[in-house]
Length: 421
Image (cartoon, rainbow, N blue to C red; front, side, top):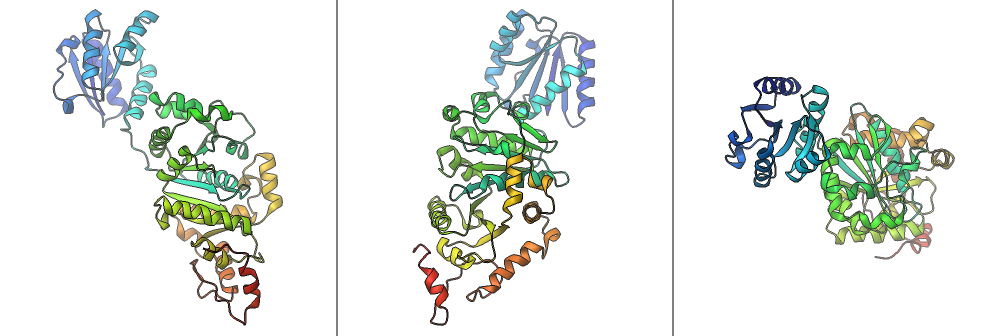
């Protein structure tokens, strides 16, 4: 970050420059001794990212206002011993972001500089991946999978995860992870979107673990209108830089806010079950995704509550939906129900349960650690399920048309259950 310090006091200049250089050797710190009038406006490219003005006098704020207006990317911070309401208001009108007490101290200066760095997005952060979960039909378990996968991802070494509830009307993702009321919601953040930075985002999120934060949905459906699609752009742009993974719980109604989240997601996970209503609605939802132009590799189908002896097989489901099944999450109702009722993630409640193992495998795959789950129990289950179907020709998930013949009357009878294309 490029920082300029302007002060009439040589002593103050040296002290401020020392603190800034101790904070980060990578920052370029320049000092100007004298009034703001001596500070050359120059070209935009030569302007600093942060201008620190020490103890401004009467005309300095007027000059600063013109300077900030001419160079909107530059952030102005004032150091002043005058902390009256009148002075604060005058500084705000001049475009000053913060007024810090003078003489300067590391306790007040360094956090302010860090906030500016967050605002300018100049700090180095991971370019986080965004995963969106959406239910093909109510009750499929999309929220359960989104919340528990977020918790499992956050348990991986060195990973920070954000869970954002985009179900504006009846979102309850936070209840799956903690028994506490959020201090702020997505609607509150949207009302402050003009000044959203890492500090505000962090303060608005529930801290579940040191590496997992949750931004809850509006607590009242009336406030859903406060959230607009363009807010999702700003929010996800910032969240990507702050977190390794951002998990979205999207409402199945596909409102404009949810659609913007799906547009910006790296991967979309439609969640369904192997019963006729889910297959029918899953087919419709996937057709909507195709009409929106989402590439096939962006949409990965997850079958929840899978049972080996389900009446509708995976091949029939794939044929009806026109998409392969990417992952299976086994049925273990008692454990899942206990997790939901207690508000405790399943990895914490029953680490050895089949669901926890499936989510752990999925988390490692999404984190790029394929070697850790090579030939895992779930992979073998998926392959075994594929091989047991008479029409399966290989183990990898694929769209396979059922070969109904006279030798296979059982599949002819069940074919009537599958929606026609």
